[in-house]
Length: 290
Ligand code: NAP
Image (tube, rainbow, N blue to C red; front, top):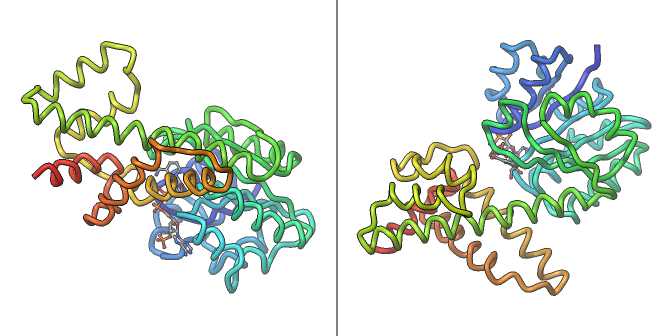
């Protein structure tokens, strides 16, 4: 039986690892806060003591971690992934991080003789649970081909985009657009409320025209009900905008709209909404409008 390691049992990682277990793969898991491994253990996964111990017993390891700092900590930290990396092993980092961090991780893995693939995903908690993510890969092609059976259980589509960095950049482009869309959506709803428009009717009007999309359709009614149960944490949305803007700085590409969206999400974080769903930006804007 093929054995996979999976590091990071957050919202996304726990659902993705569960799909690998259900598909019949042997799965070994690790999470910084160990209690989050329990549901996976109940499904049949084994728990490793450290990332190093996990990598030592798995030919290929996936990781799904919060941000560049978390990805680097797990790779380079004490008892980390690099400590157990040897010739031929594979490491697939599916976290949303910047290209530079991804390349730094790739270089360290390769130096030990390992193979590295970045594979961030488009799609949130529900697609992670349903195995319908869109996987955006860059790096070692042989590893990409080798893990396709696992990708097929986690996602509905996977792209191979070239060298390490291309998957990270594609993911940041996607989320930069999504962040700006959500910010515009929230501002539109709040402005409509100011002008005494019925918010339900705003949703209906949007859905009837060229702006209809699954995100507004799914999130809109929940937002009006002030249901901000977390699918995609707001702090991660702001992190993705920050990383996209950093890429814009590096390439001297102006990103006016994304910069404004970043400020809006940053303000929401400052208001203590970082652990809510990113749609809680609506609550932040309502507070601001007094
Ligand atoms: P999450 O629920 O916040 O999980 C984050 C994971 O990172 C947890 O396992 C956490 O461990 C771990 N972590 C954080 N800092 C760490 C550190 N210094 N050392 C070791 N582990 C650390 O986030 P998520 O929603 O699953 O997202 C994971 C990644 O996928 C992020 O990059 C996010 O941007 C991306 N993503 C999310 C979605 C979504 O809709 N949720 C969609 C697409 C992509 P603890 O449990 O110990 O905190």
